[in-house]
Length: 505
Image (cartoon, rainbow, N blue to C red; front, side, top):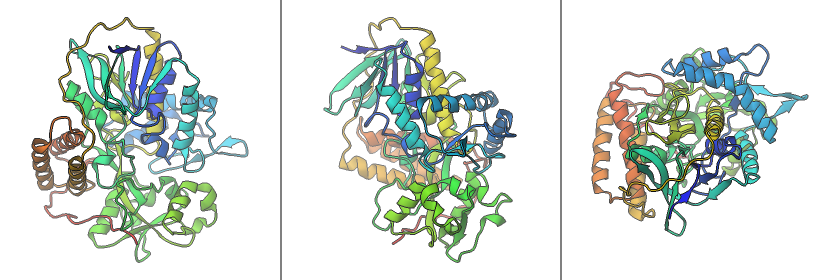
């Protein structure tokens, strides 16, 4: 017997919880989480802030212009304009929920990050914005009796009736299949960083929402645009974790510089914006240093003791590696960070299948174009999520759903040793061949390898869905032959073929 709801949200990050809270008690809502509600996913890890034109001289139109420029004008202009105009109200809403943004003398502190023409980045706890935002969203959610939690549940399949999405099949922590039905299903499952060997994303960011939507027949868009953050802490020699601590871009906004092992800065020769160039430019410059045999570091020594209070997450991550950033260079590497592509949605977050919606990083709203402007991701997740929840609530409670089509997909099995080996192999292929610098030859080779792995994996394997999304990304990258934004194609067969992060002792 399926449990009936008005709205099902798969994912409990900033986007998913904003949808649930936006419903405002007018709907019965189920929120599905792969771990502890509000603690899994990437939102909690976000060190960057939230962009909003709330400072003197700034305006939503200028925010929109910067977003379009960073996205190489492949953005959906109407989506960009709506987001920039919605940003100040998002900040007011978060303040009403109790988010403690950083202030100075009673005024909100506004930072500046790469490709922004004005200081417009609000932070909380220095470099712990995501954690503070999620704290308040979680607390607000626990006070709402209309929201029912499904924690430690894996979404297996979207349920359909007559071509419409009407629910989701889950596997709970006991291995049982649970069916939830509703006329509105929202995928807020996050990004795809865990498909790469090095990423700032947590384990949940494995493209599961894209796989669910694709298998149900929904359209996808812009999968080739994967943003690599230029600065994550370099892995240690004994570090098998694919998630690396992020070195926030705000450090460079505050004056930190990028240098190689000789102490030489290199960004000035690459861009007039130097360390504050768009992320794709900085990431490729770091990759080029590797290709030339160099190591790369961030030099924040000039900030001295202020690092401890201004960037506590960065300071503690360095301390855990026995590095003192006040007196030492900090080794960094680029890492898969954000996916501009995803489930294709319209301005109302509606996917191509009736009854299916997507928000946050799982969605492709068109806001980001070919490259995301720094600190627009939390903004997009909350703005679109809250707006969708409010819009669905206006329709009122739904009629019960009598039946759904039979399940077509094999149930997802628990992760096996073979799955882990396949996932690790796929991650390495994506890093080497579908990363910061791509070539047609290596993309073709990667696609062939994904086809082989797909044929060898059993139905229902978690790794099969990961390999599926890898293949879809590669196919999209092959189709876009020109370099633009985060998709950079070098037509030289051996360019940076061996470039790889070097572990630190």
